Image (cartoon, rainbow, N blue to C red; front, side, top):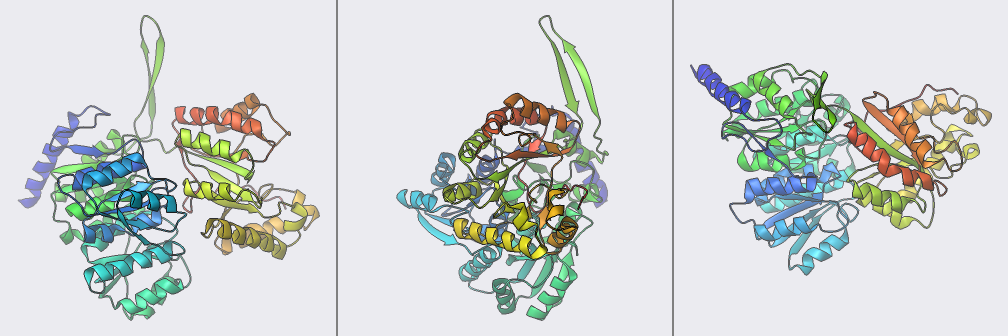
Length: 573
């Protein structure tokens, strides 16, 4: 009988949704309602409005919106303080964010992360506005998550009831864990994929004396060696909660902690990016609603049954139609397989003929703008263009003194600062394996000293992994290095679209644009090679049109992260 009632309620939901035209934001009371803004910062404000607009909040939490770890570890803190989580680019305080803080009537702001995540300038601006600040930060994501956990202990006046260990190298499982940890009076800590946890995390787990230790994610996310090590630390057998992939893990967490989610609604978010889901956990914990990560390619196994069983009165969809299309939402709500076919129709008017393309599912087309050999005098111009178009990119940098502020701006603006070479001398770096790591280590140390944070283990070999120039310095060195960097935890990226801006000293703007346009073809993932060397001024000139082309073709432009699929050449030495 209960099942039949649930099915009837779901039928009512679907009937109301069917009346909603595609692209419309407002929905009927029993349909889905979108929560989103023009970007992740505005989406966070929209979430704050939805969860906290009817009441004042003494506290606000502020985190960098382009680095996921600090924000995702803070969901239990949000629940404890009954405070919304707002996002920033990290260099200066956005007017809209300050306006939201004031509208909430907050007196104090918790700042998450070090000064490279949220600048001292922002902290000073908050103080100028008469707001108190508390910064919770460590040297890295591990340290910051421990700092948040310790503050929770202070606020609660007791040890955590549960520790939720999530993968430090990727975001999906941390998204899934946040509200469950918050509603369990727990904390979220980051664990490595393999090996021993860092000293601070190890010490905290050992002293926490928690009743439960959960590991969120499968053995590929957090290895069995880590599970065994953490078990020894707290003298408890961890309970692993996971599914076949990030979507299965999200569903498994919802089911495991179902009794905590007493609200009559649900939250949907895309699992393909963390931008919109970043603050979803705070709303999930505030309203006691399960948050389900959705795939834009296929229905997650068991998701429809779970949705039907809960029969939510309303569904909150985080992000606009591009993040979660109306089509995908309807597929999940009607148990309809997602197809990715594209149909084209032609509409003719008296003045023009216009082609209109309708994609029946969210296109999984992603593009990565990558710049090698910088920083240089061109970098600031590149960064200004990227800011104008609200696009993030990846900079494979070398050692170039005098550009310390540029390295910092790359990081604070949410771009990926990646490793290329300290010397950029093929004769030096490809002389031997030891020589390569000596050069790479110098670059890592230099970047940490400049930016204050350990650079991500993302690299690009000078000349690409298929270069043959290295052969004259050490035969077989690329075969050795491509294997050893992976064993050492690095991810290396070649490219599948060449802008050809390196084939001559100064390729023409039109040639660069043409090379990129032709190279894109029908690829779903494009990794575009460009250069940020001093002479590459025409690359700067071509960049706005390249971005426009990519957006017109339906690509999402992203920076490379630890979860970005690697693009590798066939090694030729």
